[in-house]
Amino acid sequence: MAATHGPASIPQDQESRPSPAQRPNDAFAAVLGIGTANPANCLRQDEYADWYFRVTKSDHLTTLNNKLKRICEKSGIKKRHFHFTAQTTADHPEFLDRRGVPSLDGRLGITQDAVPELAAAAAARAIAEWGRPATDITHLVVTTNSGAHAPGADLRLAALLGLRPTVQRTLLYLHGCFGGCSALRVAKDLAENNRGARVLVASSEVSTLLAFGGPDEDHLDALLATALFGDGAGAAVIGVGDGDPTPVERPIFYMVSASQATLPGTERALYMQLGRSGLDLGISAEVPALLRGTIKGCVADMLAPLGLPVVPGAGWNGVFWAVHPGGRAILDSCEAALGLEAGKLAASRHVLSEYGNMLGSTIFFVLDEVRRRRQEGDCEWGLTLGIGPGVTVEMMVLQSASSQD
Image (tube, rainbow, N blue to C red; front, side, top):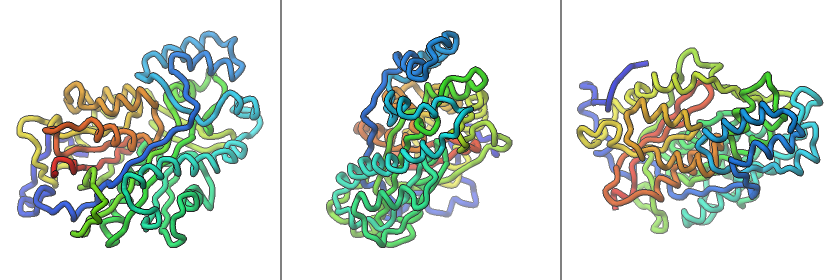
């Protein structure tokens, strides 16, 4: 991987090619509507540790309780939403013992309905902002880490929304935290290669239900995960103007370029695996350091061929950022490695604070927050970053449509 430092320059062999700024906007897919949704159950982070040890009947493990409290205090999270409740654990005591009776079937039995229903709530909001009937959706891309079904959440979601039976469906499983970014990349390709296509992309996560279990002194990764993850769904409608956009459609972001990079030798640094007792998560403490050493090169390699007209001398602060908030340490590492000014990751930090890490769904919340915070004179160009198992870095260059008004 190239160790490029600072904003990328245009290689000489590409100087004759048109840059994104020279191409018409209707050549690119655009985000035409964004929607988000969360389960009703909401827990404050400063109360979570005591709640968790109470419902798991583990009040006697005071050392672990205090450890979880310290993790929560440093997490940068104020509250999170969850599909499960205390009643869920009362109804399914087998969920608490990850080493005891197999519980995967019981967990999947709940997520089978919960995933598409939460996705439908987010998708309905995205479609409403888009402004056209749901029956005009031609393609559907769904991503989740919270299921293992066929037919899957995509088919149920299509039925809940009243999509046509001819809608072309794509379902992505177990992409981890970069799943939403991957789904957006797939949607961009579908929209740009199928004239007139309107792609609904949705991510829905109730993975805390799959991963929930009692505390275990031998598996501190699980303790970290229980302090970090929340449930939520995000959706967007994607389409290309084709030179004659429907008047009701109003682009939010143009999707200029997408890429993916895998950091060599990091396969076990972040991982997810469905097992007999649910979803196992592995999070290495080395991940923030890995990102500090590599993220600048990943971004520079992506931007090098594009020749973006960023503000001279502004460095990476010359673009806006929509970074998946995998955790406070992840955001701090990206900010430090890229030399970002305080506030450049404000949207990501706000989403982390209000919702926690909702895996692939989180990027939709961040994009929604970025557009809400935009003011006249803000950066025209921006980047999304999703970081997940692999370690995989999924990136997309965006152009704000509001800067073109």
